Image (cartoon, rainbow, N blue to C red; front, top):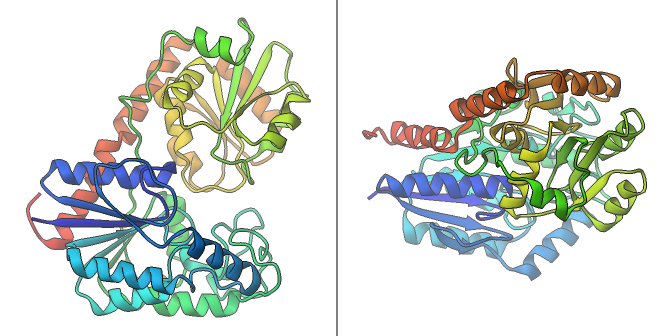
Length: 408
């Protein structure tokens, strides 16, 4: 029986944790055994779970990163236990997701992987694999990763370093480690990331671009949204512009605040995923702020209630919130950030330049002038056809079988 081991910072929690869970479920349905090794946070899973490290190791790794800029180079004992677990279960394929996040020593792991005969698939959800420090560089428009990272302009961005700048050495060590594995297939989740990968030190590795998928049986238009409107005090007759993020770091919260002063009072702005400080900030300017929620029923109701989903992110790869909104029939206005534009098709929304709030207002008005029911149907159909999770996760099973040279 074929065995799949996925390694990620989370298990069935957060966007890429749920992606790993979904891939595992599809593998199980096709007769595989499925395992997920995770570092931090999990919810119940259909796969067999293995917890890498512990909270104390995570804290020590975080402190080391802050002081020494050596993220991904601690957690040695935790990584040795993971390697022992790999030896125990003998997976047919190892599928990496986010291996950063204060829980894993990538040098130890890749030294083992380079000596094993296990094929490796690595889905890149961000850019950390080919930079000397950061997970994203678009906000500062830094291109040093194309030649060699040094003098990092984002030393205090995640993974934050308070004092040292080790970006030159980090770049060298990542390059040495990640190029040491011959049987490695990289999976960028957007064409934008694929383009940048082909300009990095990983350019000669095998690549296959696969989009993220969502559960279009869960994320679909909800007819009765009166209860969510009542719960959060959203005005009955107003047009609703919605924004959702798991956190709003560089995701455009300030742009929502500026937008509030540019649009009419008969348009309500609802923003989800705020902490207490952010909620107080937006409530003060007339925006309805909602805490981060893992309640899918609430999210579906909010997406269904909204007339427009606005995605003003300044730093992102291929956010699933755009897909979730469209699956619920809500058209999107998004900044042309990373791979965000790749989710949009004529009739499902509009792509605008970062920070262009006047165009945002115009596009919101344009959407509101469209045939609402026709637009809703088109958004849902487009998402179902192109981003349904079963189809996208099946792409991974096809890749596994191709690598193993076995029939599907």
